[in-house]
Image (cartoon, rainbow, N blue to C red; front, side):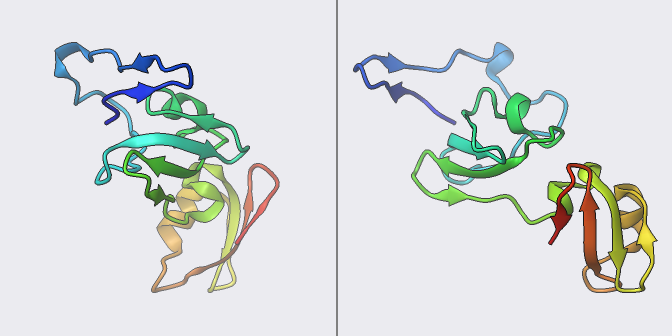
Length: 131
């Protein structure tokens, strides 16, 4: 995690203490940079940016604006694994190798697999297609 940042005006910022020492908590979190010192800054699909405190709210797993990439504290770049439409919840429909079009992410996940009946093309809820 970020221990501190030095701002352009020379002021040093440190993150607030988490109640109970941090950890735990419900819901999925962005796992970017977990082995590289934590998130420095991330870029969302709409090119907005977020830091470790606000990425989950601004462009996390459940938003319509997924994380495109993150720069880790150690200056390495992390990109999320390639998922159809950026996540199962964002799928409108997909056609798989069997020629059948499945109408939602749940059905796609159940019936289409990388090694057996891979996805050919998807229509995303935002109007885009994948791949």
